[in-house]
Length: 102
Image (spheres, rainbow, N blue to C red):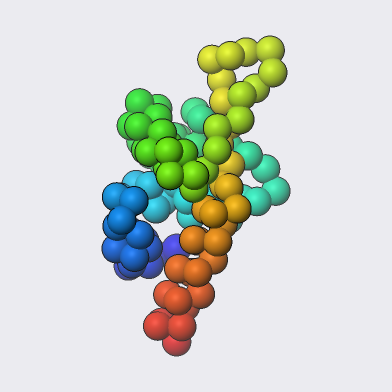
C-alpha cells in the first residue's frame, strides 16, 4: 500500500487514533494472511524498534483491530494477527482507496 493510501486509512479511522505506523501494521498483517507475524519480525519488517511496535500494537489490540497470540513455551514471545474487525476495516479502506485511484 502506498503512503497516500496509508494516510487515507489513518484519516478514515481517526476515531480510534490510528497513526501511519498503526496503519502500516494493519496493512502488513492483512497482506500476510497465511501466517501470523512474530513481534520482532514485524518490527524489523516495518523498520521500527520493538518498543515502538509494542505501543502501536497495544493500541490496535485495545480497539479490537489486532490480537496478540502467545507462543507456547515462552511467555515473552508473541505473534500478532488481524481480528475480523481489522480485516473488515482494511478491506473497506483498500477498496475505497482503489476506487479513488482508478
